[in-house]
Image (tube, rainbow, N blue to C red; front, side, top):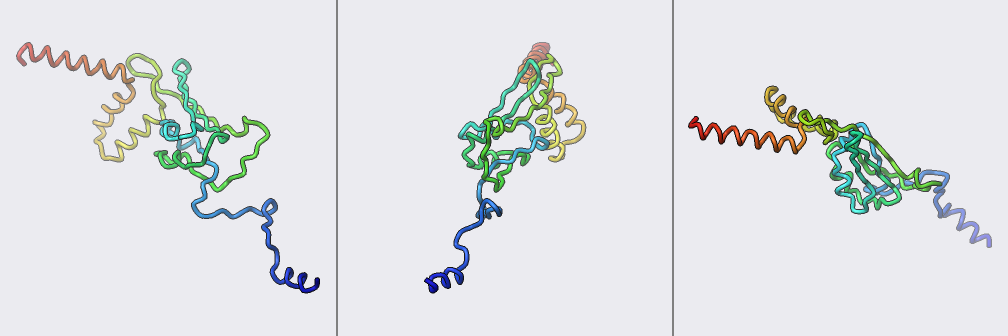
Length: 180
């Protein structure tokens, strides 16, 4: 009996003190996705990439709001959202304790304002996403005059942009008919 007790004291504790001390996870561990609203441009890349449909996006064109919801109850921690996010708004943490009393505690939600079209006045795209596109164009070295043109084009909905293209085509055809 004393031999066994001596052996146990020499070896020490064989278990970890997990609930009382934080558990160290392995490098590359994929835990809970941390969503940050500030850098998010509401592009929807994460929702398209999510195989479990844990991330959903809904645009309310009447109110001019795009809503993004992340439901941790459906998340399979694959990391696709982190891979495709252009701004780093979603990163996987090492947090794996997701116990909650209600389903609502497992939902992360954010609303983003949509931009109105310059021509028709309908809501069509998130303002932050259009701002991000302009920032990328500026970083690419586009001249200021060209940036102003692109900004007005970006603030026009796809339907009105198509009509602008048709109008320009008609103008060109008229000029060609007149022999100019």
